[in-house]
Structures are given as structure tokens and as C-alpha cells.
Amino acid sequence: MSMMTNTLGRYFAGRFLAAAIGTFVSIFMLLVLIDYIEMVRSTSKLVSASAVVVAETSLFRVPQILEKVTPFCILIGAMSCYLTLSRRLELVIARAAGVSAWQFISPALACAILIGVIATTAFNPMSTNLKELSKRMEAELFGSVSGGGVQDASGFWINQATSDGQAIINAARSEQQGVRLTGLTIFRFDPNLQFKDRIEAREAVLQDGRWLFRGIRIFTLDSPPVDQETFVLPTTLTKAQVRNSFSTPETVSFWQLPGYIRSSERSGFATAGYRLQYHKLIAQPFFLAAMVMLAASVSLRFFRFGGVQKMVLSGVGAGFLLYVLSKITDDLSKAELMNPIAAAWLPVCVGGLTGFLALLYQEDG
Image (cartoon, one colour):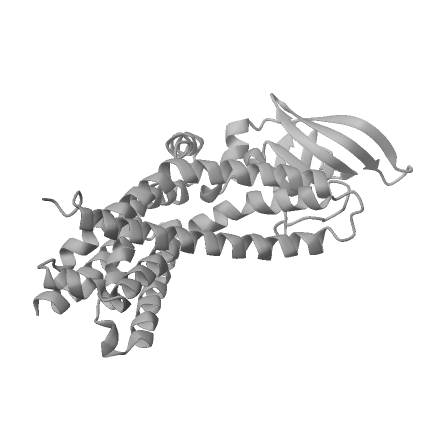
């Protein structure tokens, strides 16, 4: 009977899933707590900010962070699972019954691949949607505060030129990949590049052929500030161009990435980052399986032989080195010095082969 369908295989798979889910939940709660404390600190001066809204905003931000540490959750969960099985002598009994290491890690490999498929096809779109929702809630919380909220140090910048002159737009926060901006400052110049006025706005939405600003104040050199409810600024930018300029690969869901790649190619924008993210998501199930191989290579030793601390440290160190390798290949790919496919799959191959060779040496001499 196959190890994947018999009772022992289901037992090992269940133990691995329990350890992996426990690790996920623990890290998730830790991230929520840290992010919530940071959000409370940021909103401490806002009287209108309720604890429920702050907690929801923080909760919606965490899934995308958790997605980045998913491989480490699998690594720690697998190490915890096999160390527990070894401490209880269950691995010894399995070996005595004629079950090899390759057989009792195969259920964990299958579960890791399944988790990776779910993370790519379901969790990634959900995390990107929640991230956009958290940005919208941040804009509502900090919309009246200049420079409030969690944002980039330099904000977001757009430089556009029309027949009426040039306009430089700076936004504190971006939503919907740049289609909606909040916390804006606009510097306008006439066709002779002479300063015309400065406009501060609460928010702006890109429509067909124009930016629609709301809650604005206009400053000029020879007159006092003027408040207006709305203001229209013509533009030649399209929504596709703005999305390609503002959206980062991490904010685009797996199912939308092929469309963004084609759109960026037609617009003449660089597509290396989008291609890299797309292939990394495709490779994610196998990357999680490689993490299981690494965990098994350092966790299958008989518990009473000692050296558990060294095993744990070596596993964590191997995972960290694999993470460093993935960051190096990411940077090389984004700089167009390495093919995105090679950059996405190289850490998978290195991690998988390292774990496979280590297990091969331990089991077959």
C-alpha cells in the first residue's frame, strides 16, 4: 500500500500539518501584535480613530507580510514535527518496521506542495486585496493629517506635461495601483516653465483624460489661499500607464500578473519585476517542498544521540542562507542581469538538492 494512503502516511501528514499550522498561527499572532502596536502609536493623536478600525487596518496588512515568511513557517513546522516524532521514538519504530526516511517524509512533501498551491492561487490574491483595503482604511484614518500614516519616505511622484503646462504631483499614499491617491501636493507651471501655483488636495481619482481632486486648497504668489471642493486637472495618462508606474509586483495578485506583464510590454515599461514575481509564485510549492527536505536533513537524527541544538541551528542557518540567495537572485533579476525564470527557480534547486544530498548521505551512506 502506498505511503500516501495508508494509516502511517496519514498520521505523518497530520502531524506535519498540525506543526505547520501551529507555526503559521503563532507567527501571525506575533505579526498582528507588533503591527497593531505600531498602528496604535501612529494613531495616538487622532481622536476619531477607534480601536476597532485600527485593529482591522492592522489585521488586513499582516497577510501580505505573512506570505513572505511562509517558507520559514514550513521550515520551522517541519523541524518541530520531526524532532517531536524523534523524541517520542516514533521514527525509531517506523524505521524498525522497515519504513525508510524517503517514505515518511513523502507525506510532508505532498502537504507542502499542496500548501504552496493554495498559497499561490488563493492566499496571494486574498492578501493583495486585503492590502488594498488596508490602504483605503489608512487613507480614511490619516486623510486629514499631513504626512500621516504608514507610507514611503518620499511618497509617490508623477510628472505630466500637457498643452497647459507642466504639473508635478506628489502623493503620500497610493491605492488601486495609483488610480486613487491621497495626501497630495501639486506644483503647476505654465508652458514657459514659470511657477503658476501650488495645490494641496485630500484625494484624487484618475478618470478618462483627467485627475479629479477633492478637498483642495490653492496657493498662489499674489493672492491668499482659496479653498475649493473639487478641481479638475487634464492629463494624457491612462489608467494602465499609472498602474504600471505605481504598482509593485508584490501588490499584484497571481491571476492579474500575466495581464500586467502584457500591458507593461505594450507601454514600454520594464517587466523584469513582474516576471520574477510570477515565476516565484509558480515555484512556491516546490520551494516549500525544498524547505521540508532541508528540515528533514537536520531533524531525523535519533533524539537521544544529543546535538539537538546544533541540528536546529543548522536548519535555521540553511534556511537563512537560502533566503539570502533568493534575495540576491531577485536583485540580479530586477536589474535585468539574470533571467527571471532562473532567478525564481535557482533557490528551489539549490535548497532541494542540498536537502536531497544530505538525506541521501544520511540514509544510504
